[in-house]
Length: 196
Image 1 (cartoon, rainbow, N blue to C red):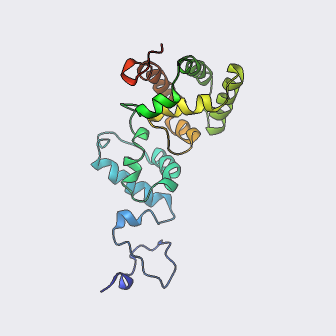
Image 2 (cartoon, helix red, strand yellow):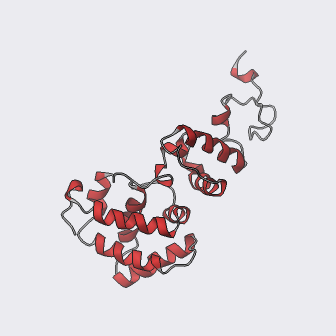
Image 3 (cartoon, rainbow, N blue to C red):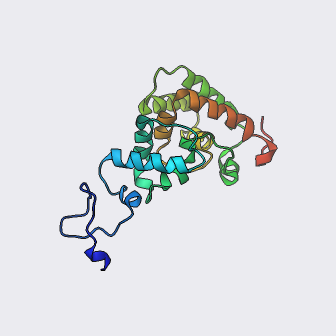
């Protein structure tokens, strides 16, 4: 029996009728299922096996994570492996990104952004974006001067899904906690910075 002979057992499979589905691993196959519910269930199972398994995440939270990461993952395990920052605060910051994106003015800029974020009420993505733009304007800097260190502060890395998606999913309070922590930690000599 060849892979062409295997018929997909998933009713919602997006493989066109008449073409065999080559994915017989149900977890891997869940990535092709157009419904978020199947992806969320598969991500929940993967989380249970990970270092984040002791924590509990509701379906609403995981649906947001799956939506943000959908285009960036190939396998269900990638939801956890490629985006651990959705499940715990960064323990470390990518030193190359710190070197490139963190300078003597970064801490003060992010402190100003924390002040702006603290005024927000139940912020959505667009609200976070508007607050960042206001802060950049007040500081007379480009948006990128805030966006890149902010991404580093909340995720520990320099790439990933949309920054405003990350902020919205994490929520205001967690975002502020992570920025405050990064101001203290990423500015330390451990990361090659001597900036206060």
